[in-house]
Amino acid sequence: MPKTYFNYIGGKWGKAKNAGTFEDRNPADTRDLIGTFPQSGPEDVEAAYRVAESAYDAWRLTPPPMRGEIILKAGLLLKKRKEELAQVMTREMGKVLKESRGDVQEAVDMAYYAAGEGRRLLGHTTTSELKNKFAMSMRMPIGVCGLITPWNFPVAIPSWKIFPALICGNTVVFKPAEDTPLCASLFVEIMEEAGLPGGVLNMVHGGPQAGRAVVRHPKIRLISFTGSSEVGAEVAEYCGRALKRCSLEMGGKNAQVVMADADFDLALEGALWGAFGTTGQRCTATSRIYVEKKIFERFRKALVRGARAIRIGNGLKPGVQMGPLVNQDQLRRVQGYVRAGIEEGAKLECGGRIAKKSGLERGWFHEPTIFAKTHPDMKIMREEIFGPVTCLVPVRSLEEAIHQVNNTSYGLSSSLYSRDVNRAMRAIRDIEAGITYINGPTIGAEVHLPFGGVKKTGNGHREAGETALDIFSEWKSVFIDYSGRLQKAQIDVD
Image (cartoon, one colour):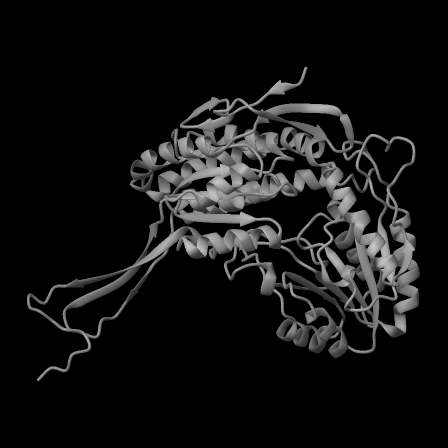
């Protein structure tokens, strides 16, 4: 029988105030009901805020190394339960088991990194312009933070937000995605087992109503949101009016460039992985591929052949390389983009259909899809599809390729395959993106480096790495005058 799960508020598990629930089903086989979860509303968010606010003073006064010890223990527990979490993740959102294990490993890595920051949380000491005066800066926590996470990385992305928020001394109201609520519950369960005090981390399940309540709560001081650019713009608009700190990590229209001097097989492997890994449901997925004309036809044939060979199915089964889309709405969205591409005159090289072979009838499966003969103004070239669809475009030179890569309203990830170091350095300098890979695919971030993008991809903040601390802490400048007399900075002395 499917299990009933609960919210986590003040160190206790309980139902939503209105007792409403929603179902969590396996996208590879919708007959598989994983469980039912609370459909939370503003009352639940208010309850979560109250206990988070009550826990704040004790947590911010806990020495950062002690906070780090709890996060380190959580990382060790995540590692111990890696296979369990990966199995649940594949069942909840569909990506193949190998990728789900990688998702959990990313959270393990983030725990280790954040725990180490508990021994650092570096500020700066500097000189003063006045005699007998000491100056420094230090990090201070912000307060109660509202964290809203997506379904495509249901353990990794919560770790990117929760661990830095906690190590900085904040308390948290966490609203996970509806499509992956069990991953979130297990994550919180691990934090509880690691010894996190009650009230420091609180979780409310639910849909848009719960998310809006978190964003619009008048006393939640910070919102960290990962999701679509459309929803992110609404979050930013409200936070701007409320003068609330806001960190947004949103969409991408990422491009890979393949020059004629590239390692052909390596570039091909990177394109297939970047475009169809996680069924294209990554903000860093390779949505556009620019190939130098000298090798375009050869690359096109090889890419189509590789896409057709991808084994689609339930990600829990051995040998499967690509799982389903996360839900029916996402499948309809991808089909809508395929129709738009055809109507606008793009050439469908392969795929384009809902996958209906034996064993796939009960899930949201779509074929790996490649378009050619596109134009930069086409919808499939401009908008984030978030599915297994990519566009293949010939270019005459690196300069043309970089111009096309930058011809987008997004700017998250990018990639160049070339053996020419001079080309590599020009691409690094000239591509407008938060991430550039040389001889690697557009996907595959590492937790100790900043993650985020430019233009519509975000609002200037970066997650992961030391830069994440800048989201979740305030800078305080401190001046200590031991001269024993009034000294006036910037005032001429007679």
